[in-house]
Image 1 (cartoon, one colour):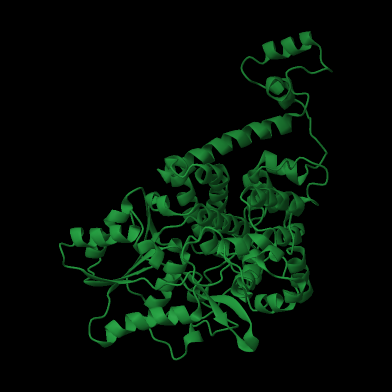
Image 2 (tube, one colour):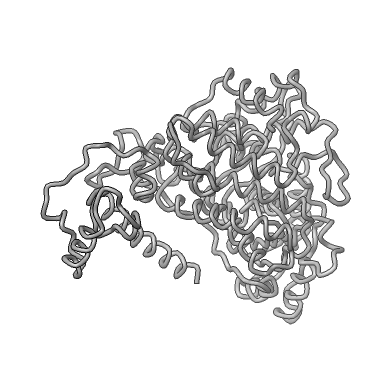
Length: 543
C-alpha cells in the first residue's frame, strides 16, 4: 500500500511538473493556458482570446511555432515551484545525468534498513516471528513504566510468545532500561545478558519494547554479549572510541516502538551518555549496519498509552531527523571509505533517503497537531507512527547534522530540569526531542547559505511562502520561522535558559559538541569553535 501511495504521488507530481513546464516554456501571454494562468488578460481583447481558443481546440499551442524564449533566469523559489525533483537531483547529478564527484569522493550509497512491518495489532505477531526464527530463550528489554500500563505492549508481547509458541519459547523481562541511557546503564543491560550466557542458558533472541532508549539499549547488549570487546569503548564512534566494526551477525532482534520519534527500529545506531575526562558529559554512540534490528513491528496501537508531552518531544525528534538528513552533505561529497564494509551508516543525503525524509515531513506536518489534540484519531495516529519510521529510514542512511550534535551536550549536561508529563522520573532529564529542537532554529540559519534550495524546499513544505524577495538569502530565516511556530504551538521550552542553562555554561556545551565528528562532518558547513559558541548563545532564548 505504501509503495502504491508513493507511486501515485510521483506520477501526480510528474503531471504537475509537466503543466508547469508548459506554462513556463510558452510564456505569460500564451493563450492555450490562459484559463490556468489568468482568467482575463488585460493586454489581449476578449475577441482575441476567443479566436485563440477556437484555433486551438486540439490543444496545440500557437507559440510552439514561434521562436519565443525567456531570457530571464528563474529564481531558486521559481525553480522549486516548477520542478522540485530537478532541484533536488542537482545536488547529485550534472545536466547530462552523470554523477557529480571527485577522485577521492564516494560514488555509491547503500540503503540499509530493518525489515519493517506496519499495522495496528502487529505486536501480537511477535511470537510467530520468534518461533519462525528458531528462538528458544529470549530476553525482553523494556522500560519499567510500560510494564504496568493498562493495555501494556509488554503484556501483548508476553501473551503472543505464550500463545504462538505453545510454551516452547522461554522469556525473561529486563525492565531496568534507563530513559536517555548512559554508559553505566548499557553496562548493566550487558551484564544481565552475560549472566545467562555464563550459567549455560544464553539468550538466542532479543525483543525491545519501548522508545529509542529501550531499542538502543537492546542493540548494545546484543552486540557486547555476542562479541565481547577488550574495552567498552572499542565499538564506540571515534574520536571517543575506536569505532571497530561489528565483527559478524548478531542474535535476532525484534524492535517494537511505543513512541513516534526515534526511528530506532530502522537504524543501526545506538546512542548513550558518556562521562568524559574533566567531568564533561556528552552523548556518543555505536553505529554499524549489523546493529540494526532484524525486524521492526510498527504498531500504531502502541501510541494509545503515550503521554501527550512524550508524543510532542518524540515528534520534534522525528521532525529534525527529516530536516537534517535532507540538508546533510550529498553522499558524493563525502570521502570514500577504503572498503564497502567501512562505508558509514550515515552516508550523507542521497536520492533515496530524500524520498523518505520529505514524505515523513509532509506526513508529520499534517498529522501531529491532529494526533496531539485527539489521540483517538486513528488516521492521525497511524500517520505519525508511520512518519517516524519513514524519517528513521531517511536519517538512518542520510545522517543528521548540527542540531543533533548540539543536543548531545544539552541533554547530557542537564542540571535540575524535569519535563512535564514524564511519569515516575528518578533523575533530572531533558528529553532528546526537546534538546534537538532547541538548537535547530539557530543551526538552520547557520547552514542555509550553503544549500539554500534545500532549506527553501523544507520551508515550503512546513507552510512558508517562499515566493518572497531575496528568498535565497532568507532561506534559513524562513525555515527557522516555521520551526519556531511549531515550538510555540506545542509549548516547547523557550531556549536553553528555560532548561536551566546560562551563558556561563556555553564553554562546556561547546566542549561536549566538538567530539561529535560522526554528525558534524555531515553538515554543509563545518562549524568552528566560535560558530558553536554563537549557536548556543542564539539558542539561549528563541521566541
